[in-house]
Image (cartoon, rainbow, N blue to C red; front, top):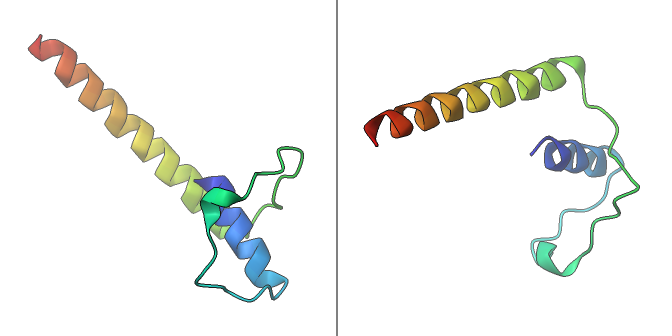
Amino acid sequence: MAYSIRTKLFLDSIGLPTNQEYEKQIYVKNRSWNPPPVSLFLENKITEFKKELKKSQTTLLKSSTELT
């Protein structure tokens, strides 16, 4: 998710036109390229979201194992 957000913001920043006909599935990721970090504010929000998501996942897994 963070990779996608950073890539989108990077492409927007260089002025790449948005193409509604873009088929994401037919393109191969260049695994040796990583998009540059976004603003500190957004990086913090991404980190917070990941932590909350992980916390929710852990809680859900814990509650589902308690039911069995």
